[in-house]
Amino acid sequence: DAKTTQPTSMDCAEGRAANLPCNHSTISGNEYVYWYRQIHSQGPQYIIHGLKNNETNEMASLIITEDRKSSTLILPHATLRDTAVYYCIVARSNYQLIWGAGTKLIIKP
Amino acid sequence: EAQVTQNPRYLITVTGKKLTVTCSQNMNHEYMSWYRQDPGLGLRQIYYSMNVEVTDKGDVPEGYKVSRKEKRNFPLILESPSPNQTSLYFCASSLSVSSYNEQFFGPGTRLTVL
Image (cartoon, rainbow over all chains, first blue to last red; front, side, top):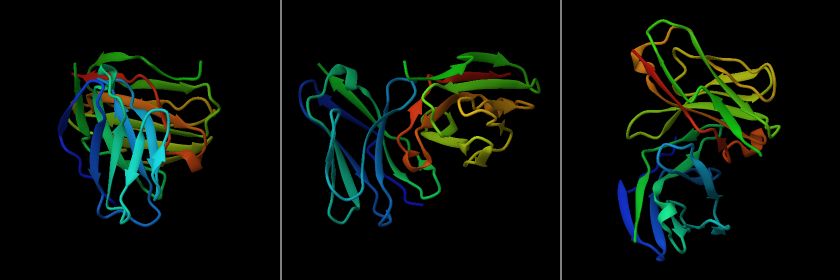
C-alpha cells in the first residue's frame, strides 16, 4: 500500500497562503491522492482529490508533481478557522483509505 | 439537512457489557464505514459496507461487529468491550462505492471502557 509522509506541524499567518506538502513516493499509477481535514476532534471533512492534474475547488488547490511522488495542498487565504489537522491520503483499490498522522496546521493572527 | 448522526456521543461503560453505537445517514448513500481514532494517530477503519447486507472487514475489526439491514443505518456492536477499545469512533458515508473516498463523517462517539 502506498504510504504518505507529512510534516508533523506547520504555522501560517492569517491571510497568507498555506502550503501543505505531502510525499507519496510509492504511489501507483491509478491511485488517487485525497486531502481531508479535522478540526479539533470533529469528524474529518473532505477537501479535494486528484490523480495527475492539478485541481481546484472552493476550498483549496491541489498541485501534484509530474512524477506523482509528491503533492501540495494550498489554502489560498488562510483564516483562523482553517486551524486543523490536515491528512494526505492515498486511496487503496479495495475501497479503503490509509490515514497517516497528518499535519497540524496552526493559523496565527 | 444532509448529515450523518451517531448515538450516543459519549459513553462510559465497563468491561464485558455489550453496547451498540448507532449510525444513520439521510443522504441515501450506498457506502458506509466505521473508524476509530486514538490519540496522535489517524483514523483506522474497522468495518465498511458497500450496500445493504454487504459488509467487510477493515484494518482493525477484532472485537467489533456490524450489520447493514437498511441502507440508512450501520450500527457498530461491541459484544464484550475491553479497555483497549477506549477510543473516538467515527461513522462515515459516501454516495456510492465509486465515490467511497469522498466521505461524509458523523460527529464522533467518545467511548471509555473501564
